Image (cartoon, rainbow, N blue to C red; front, side, top):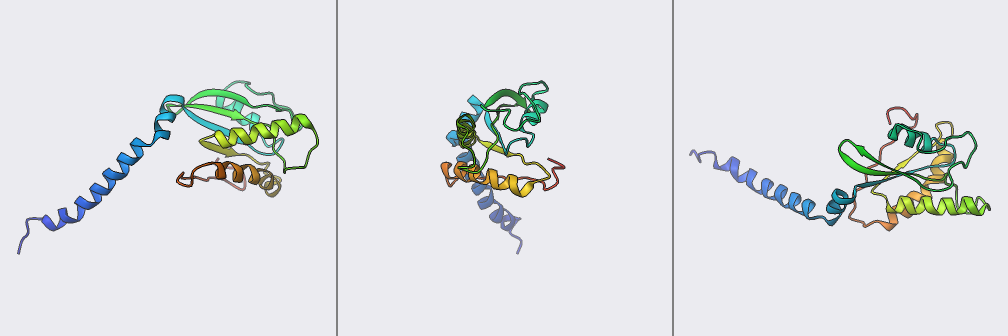
Length: 169
C-alpha cells in the first residue's frame, strides 16, 4: 500500500528537529550575544617583518600602523575598529613574536606578552609569516597559537586557513 508519502516525512521530521535543536543552542550561545554587542576581535600575529602592519593598513584603508623594513617596529598592540562585511571587528596588529627566551630586550618581551594576550582574547587569529621562511615563521607563532587555543574552551570550533605561497589569502 500507499502510505500517502508518510515514510518520506517520517525520515525528514527527526532531521528537522535535530536542526532546530542545533540552531536554538547556537542562538542561545552567550558568545554570540557578546559578538553582536561588542564585535568580533581579530588578532594579527606573526614573527617580525611578516607584513602584519601592512595587512592592517590594507584592511583599514589608511596608515593606521607604522610600516618599516626595521624588524620590531610595532612594539605595542595597534587596534582599529572596522566594518568587515557588515560585522563590527576590532582588528589588532601585534608586535612580532619570537620563540620564548629568544630576546633579552625588555620592551620587545613586553610587546610579545601583549601579542599573546591579544591572541588569547581574540575570536579570530590571523597568522602571517614571511613566504621566504614559512617554517621559521610557523615555529615562532606555534607557541602563541597553542597558548591561545589552550585558553579557549574545548567546545570552540577552530577554522584554519592558509597558503604556503601566501597567495589567495
